[in-house]
Image (cartoon, rainbow, N blue to C red; front, top):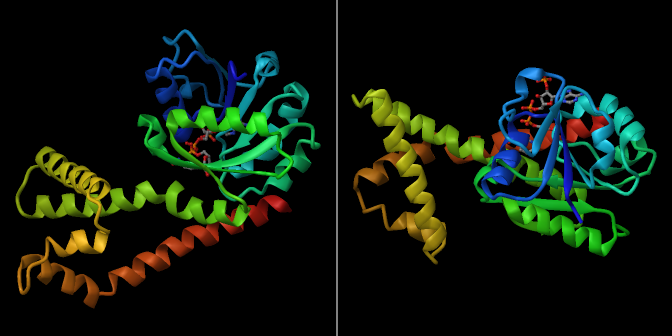
Length: 270
Ligand SMILES: NC(=O)c1ccc[n+]([C@@H]2O[C@H](COP(=O)([O-])OP(=O)(O)OC[C@H]3O[C@@H](n4cnc5c(N)ncnc54)[C@H](OP(=O)(O)O)[C@@H]3O)[C@@H](O)[C@H]2O)c1
């Protein structure tokens, strides 16, 4: 049973996890580790203990979440080997880093898996994907799935290549949508709306359109068609987007994220 959780790296993703655990009043004790003491934003929260280096508390954890950047893993792996309880599960959230690299650095002493998720974990709306080897114990896997349910929907994937592709799409995905929404915000401003109004209007547009797509049973193409009337205003914008090949540019850009996750994996293999 998962009672104590060690989170290594108190950056963006870790903070989403912790916010959600706190908000859901999950009865977990969290040991949070980051080399940067300024990342301790939870001093007023009783069940979150912050440390600037891995210590004896780590030994008491049934679950370890690695929310560090891939290039920091080598040094962290030494501490996990020294302090980790061999019965604990070590989950890597790191982009690219392959499971065999993690297992090798941890001397195959721990149960390990990779999870890809995104910042939507903060409010329990993330899509998370788990990759574990075939011999990962079934009960342990069940309790892992159960734990990640706290952050949204969780699905098992059978290959690491899927994790790398999902990293480029679901892990990075929120940034693409926000990027587009920021462009819409800039256009609001260009049209004379003030900063706060432009921020709020574009956020509302983003949220309400997502809500409609999610709840409407039609596919997105058909929903889009309901906005576009022949020779109308929306069509004028979309024709320009097609002319400028925006679709191709975006697909090629997301491909760069996938290539980067493969590259990160290769670098960490050396
Ligand atoms: N952010 C996302 O939306 C997202 C989504 C999916 C997956 N991921 C993956 O999750 C991982 C973390 O991403 P992030 O955006 O949260 O990164 P981040 O904000 O940079 O957080 C990483 C934290 O780890 C700290 N750190 C570095 N070395 C450490 C060590 N030896 N011990 C303990 N802490 C250490 C960093 O400190 P310094 O800043 O001082 O180095 C930083 O505070 C990455 O591998 C990323 O690929 C992120």
